[in-house]
Amino acid sequence: MEYEVLRFGNEKNPVVIIDNFHPDPEALRRAAYGLEYSKLSTGFPGLRAPFDPNYMGQLMPLLQHILVEIFGLSKGVTLRECCASIVTIKPEDLSVSQCMPHIDGADPMQLALLHYIDAPAKGGTGFYRHKETGYEAITPEREATYFSKTQPGFEKGGFPKGAYITDSNAYYEKIGKIEGKYNRMAIYRGNLLHSGDINPENNFCEDPAKARLSINTFLQGR
Image 1 (cartoon, rainbow, N blue to C red):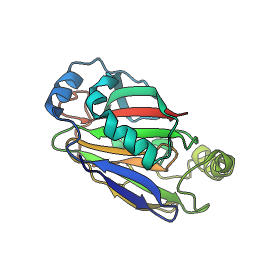
Image 2: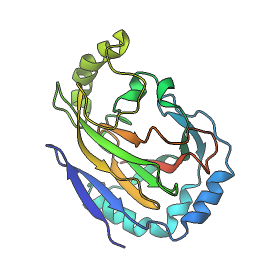
Image 3: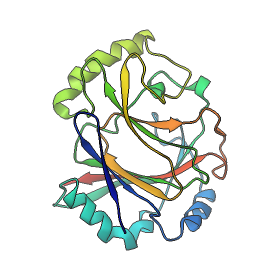
């Protein structure tokens, strides 16, 4: 199975794309339809449900190759979380922080595996640069500086609200995008500034058969 490595922006952090990732994506969709969703994350604009990570079992040789050769995680990884996710919050109901790019954590050894399984795909993922600092990835060394520049804006309501970010604005420059595509897997470090590239015409409902549906897996490198 082939994969593509993209490198966005000035920092050239790798983003891996694998198309036609799973041999039976329809079985994954059916499994996701039968789950009980709840608000597992305060930052995610929707609902999540635990999903069996063993669904990637037969694809582990490829993933292990990518983890070592592209991300340098030669000592292996541990599973932090695997869940099915649906986007349910309408743009006008978003918090200020949900309207801006985010990170999953500052540790560069944390990876996000995002598997798009909605059909047709209802939005990809955008990557951003913080204009004031020039940061595209937030490392532990950069974390305090970055949040000292952004937190006052959140607290004072100085950032735009009421829409998913899908392009550059006064604070962030869009440096790349992964197109949402049925059965596409994307792998990237969780400390990259990113956001779901959500079409405002989406069906923001709690039915996983109609909402933007993905399987999100988070790994921790040793």
